[in-house]
Length: 79
Image (cartoon, rainbow, N blue to C red; front, top):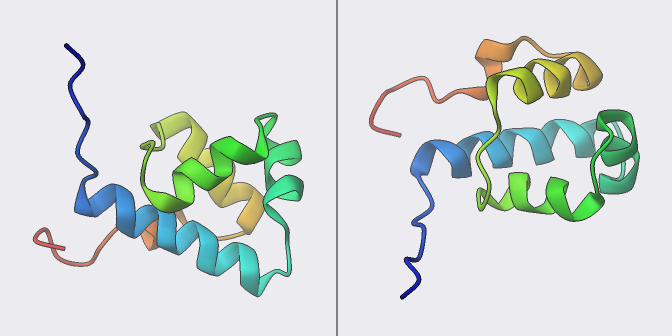
């Protein structure tokens, strides 16, 4: 039997922040994926919150998007 993973509010928030910044920079999912060395499907999963972003990957994403790592997290713990 397979367990369904629930999407956390933090993963959803981080995904939305990645998408927002990527769009501000007029960058496609494919461009971000290429810069990270992953598939565009992986970027889709990050942006939907389906897959969480590891600390190392978050650091790389933030460098590419030119934002501080802290800007990706919700301001309040309950978010």
